[in-house]
Every structure is written in C-alpha cells, then in structure tokens.
Length: 430
Ligand code: AMP
Image 1 (cartoon, protein in one colour):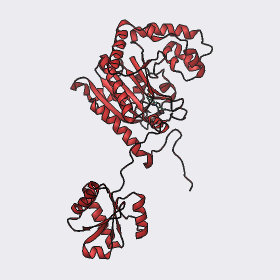
Image 2: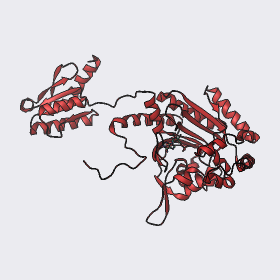
Image 3: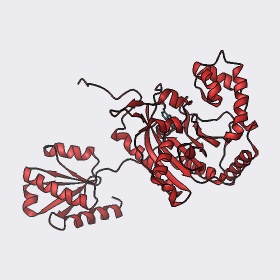
C-alpha cells in the first residue's frame, strides 16, 4: 500500500485503542471544572490574527516564531489558535456574557497550533483543557483555579507533579523591573540571540523564557521580579499562598517562572513532571488582569490555566497508570442465512433503542467467522439465529463465560427476556 501522504509533522491521530483514555481524562477535567461552576465555551479554531498579536503579545515566542498565520481568500490575516485564552476573552466580550454578572467561569477543551520543532511532548497540533475566570480579582480566585488543577491531577492519579508559583507583578511595578532587566541583559548583548537583542527595548522579560541555551544560562543571573513587586502585588501573592496553605497544597516559589505569554500579571504557576523528559510542563496559568481591557473590554480581572493533555497522557504512560477499558459488546446476534440476518439486525436495533451494546453480522461472514468476531469484540452473550429459531420464534442465548444457555423469545418480549437473563447473570456474578 502506498499512501499519497501521511499526517503532517508534529501531529498525530488518536486511534480507537487510545481514544477511550483521552475521553476519560477529558471527562475528569470537565467534571472538576463543572463542579467549580465553570461552563464550556467552544470558539473557532481560527481567529483574526490581531487577536493574538494584541492578546498573546507580539514579542512572545508564540507570536514571533510559532503561529500558523495565512491570508484567506478574502485577504484577511487569519491564525490558527496557538492557545485558548485570547479566544475565550473575545467570545466573552462579543457575546456580552459579562452582563450576566461576575465571575464568568468558562472552560474549553481544544486543539492548539504552534509551529515548533517537534519532539516528545512538543507538537504542532496539541490538546489543551483550560479554564478562565473573569471578574474575580481576589487571591482566593487564584487559589481556586490552582486547587482545581491540583484536584484534577490527583483524580487522574498522576504522581510527583510539582507546583511552581511566582508573582510577576503588575504593569506599574514591572516598569522598574524591566529597567533592571534591561540593564542586566545589556551587559550580555553580544551573546544574546538575535530575537532577544530585539527584545531588550521592547520586552526584556521575554528574554527570561528564551529557549536558546546561551540566553537561558545568562537569564539565570538576572534580577528577580519578587525583589521589585509593589506592596499591593506582594500582599496579593501572600494571600494566594495563605489560601493554598489553608488547603494543604504544596508549592515551590520559582522566581524564574515568568510564563511565555505577555498577558500575565501577578500570580503565575506551572505544574511540572520529571518523568517525561525536557518538556515537563504539563500545565500552567496565571492571572491576566489587563487582557480583557487590551482586547477592547472594560478593565476586568482574569485568571486561568491550561493543561496540556498530550503531556498528561505521557505522564500516565510513564507512570504505568491504568485507565478503565472501554465497554465491550454485551450481545452478538449471529445469523445463518439472509432471512435470519434481517431478524438479527432488527433485534440488535431493538436492543440499541434500550441502550444495550449489541452487534450482528454486517460483513456476510459464515457462522464460524461470526463467532470468532463475537469473541474478538468481547461479546458476553451470543444468540444464533437459523431456520429453526425463526420458525419457533425462540432462540438460545449463550453466556460466553459460563457456557450456560437460556431460551429467549424472539417476539415482542425479546428485550424484556434478554434483560432478565442478563440481570440474573449479573446478580449471580456469572
Ligand atoms: P502555554 O499555553 O504555553 O502556557 O501551555 C500550556 C500547556 O500546554 C503546557 O504546560 C503544555 O502542557 C502544553 N503545551 C504547550 N505547548 C505545547 C506543544 N507544542 N506541544 C504539546 N503540549 C504543549
């Protein structure tokens, strides 16, 4: 077989043997978010490019190097979403969701697109589950979203996930910090990468998360934001920590944590695993009190996080965490001739209407091959229909585990009788 093409680099298919695991992870994330009053928002996979230029920040790696931007046939500049927050803010503002009162709590489960060099845990299409809370400026809101993420991680059974925490202050205190950073990095101007040199004037804080090893080494000695934050920001940060301590959430203050997107203010945090190699950040987030205004809304506090589902899957694999198997077929109705096949189809359909996982032959197989297939799909019960069964309107239903057979009517009582046999077997744990 010669395929005309393969999945693009940095993308992959989630196939049936894994999709069940994805569904479970997503279900846990959804249930945690909904328990905390968050409701789902689904936004377009592409947006006008200016949303990300303004929202994510035009000096960030994401905007400078990684966006999938193209001109559509109408000459508009369009970008595939590189992250979920900007789209959620736009949707909130455009729809007037804020009119319903604050806080507005939204979650999303989406694919994101970044043109990065693919490696383990770093993809060009990846999956994020994120939450965003608008209009809640109190430190308890920061702590609530962090606590939700911690609870999700615990419910998934992930081990050894560290929580890193920092405050990157507000635009006022950051001005002083920027000055100090610029001064420091100017001393290394010859060694910094080209992008970072251009960031010296525009946004020196971005140099702190440059991926180039040389810049990263220089960044280690840079001034620390916590030495520059104002009293209000310090008090907020202390309050966040008090809330986290109140619910026994362990964290480590990491003064080098600034996160890669420009919109963050005050609290930033990241969840990190040491079990999946260099790309160990499984999720992260923070407060973004200026973003709503920057995108055209009234000044509105914001806080959120995004978990990288691909990396969570990697951690689960690395830690050998087992997830429940998908449901198996409950009953397979085999048929020995065409007339019986129509009947098998109709009975299967009756079972489906009652919510029973049932199947019958759709491939014109002989009886032996059908039974082999029933075995393959894990059918707990089988029924075989032939001339005799149709004539008598009665068939034998076999419990594949015990070999026991029970007669069931193929008439109007079929589903009722079927359910009685199944529940009796379950009651007896057969
Ligand atoms: P960010 O929007 O960069 O804060 O990313 C949030 C989370 O998304 C990270 O902690 C990662 O788990 C995940 N993530 C970000 N970029 C990628 C990528 N290129 N491939 C896979 N996961 C990613």
